[in-house]
Length: 186
Image 1 (cartoon, helix red, strand yellow):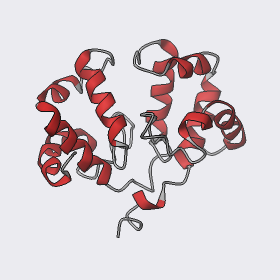
Image 2 (spheres, rainbow, N blue to C red; image 1 turned 90 degrees about the vertical axis):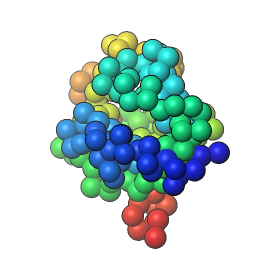
Image 3 (cartoon, rainbow, N blue to C red; image 1 turned 135 degrees about the horizontal axis):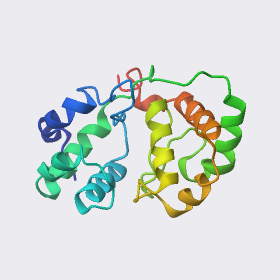
């Protein structure tokens, strides 16, 4: 069981890239972690540590987290951070196409609002940074993100750049779950 108060101290190292808010950077180099499911955070850190996900920037920090309790604590803290409701979005000109792609390919695992599934370690993607989503989709398609769900890999193989931009724009605009927003956390 993670202790968010203990995790806040550990998160100080993470804050250098993901910001104290957990919102990542506007360019999408570092994703928004705030509000993410604990199971997803643990899986990603474990995959980076085990070499199952290539992330040279994150690797030194992932191995600094010592022991299961520290990992549980820092991920518990991150999950309590409120999400950025003004996250970077796309141009908004392909939203019907993005919605159709999302409903056809993504909703079964990520949910109708991009809420994901903590039980299945499917990430919360609604409200994620547009630029980050595009990069991750392309990395999944190109095999650079080796820890991706095999079903997702098959789905995005046929996506064009237009498809990536449209679905990323749609996902970035999905309503952040109220309980994960600054208003909902009050």
